[in-house]
Amino acid sequence: MLDEVVIKTESLLKIFEEGKKREVTALNDVSLQIRRGEVFGLLGPNGAGKTTLIRILVGLLTPTGGEAHVLGRNVTADIEYIRERVALLPQEAGIYERLTARENLIYYGGLYGIPEETLNERADELLDIVGLREKEDYQVKGFSGGMKRKVLVARALIIEPEIIFMDEPTTGVDTIGARVVRTLLKRLSSERNQTIILTTHDLNEVSELCHRVGILNQGRLVAVGKPTELEEKFKAANLEEVFTGLVTGEGVYGE
Image 1: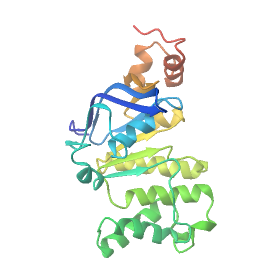
Image 2 (image 1 turned 60 degrees about the vertical axis):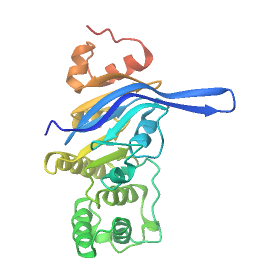
Image 3 (image 1 turned 180 degrees about the horizontal axis):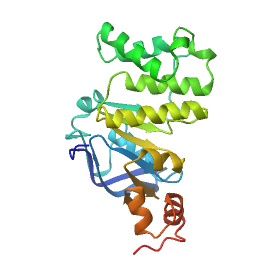
Image 4 (image 1 turned 180 degrees about the vertical axis):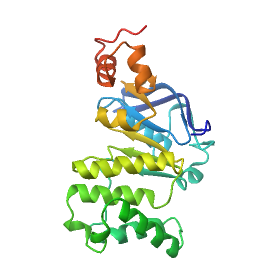
């Protein structure tokens, strides 16, 4: 893993206006660095600010204050450069159900101007990896939720992004399928040096995959570090105890 910082935020602030008089602070003074090749787990309860942070980093939201840089570029000034080099897999990602699994990959990659021959080679590899090669010519509308999720994972990877944002990537996937996705993410990090930002409520998945984690609560980044480091720092038996203690304010004592 290289030491190159590919994501950096400084005092990031995001405030949403609800009505004429009410403001909601979704992110408050978030400063964070993520390195190339890292699998970084972004944790927090619902409404903690995880999705808001990701949406800022991919250019779907504009920060209210502070700065965010991705691949050395400012997200407000150079977002087109960033979008060509990152992939986003939202939890509720849409899929073209009347297209086949293969057509979904080819169509999406074509939007990025990838040559047809290259696209077909990448599609072959990805369909093999996620275990859908035998179903590649079937319309996605007949797929189970887990199979659709595999197509979406493969679709996100077809452009060979430098950074991949994944929101609950194994949601709805069976045990074997989830193992396939996790193994793939490990390979992308270790063999291709791709950076993965992962949100999940499965803390076992986090412990298995993530080099470091960041815990958000009420818009603030309350802890960052390796899972084992956080367990030691907060005198916790496991990551779940760290997470629960920081979110509820109970049971985490620190040094």
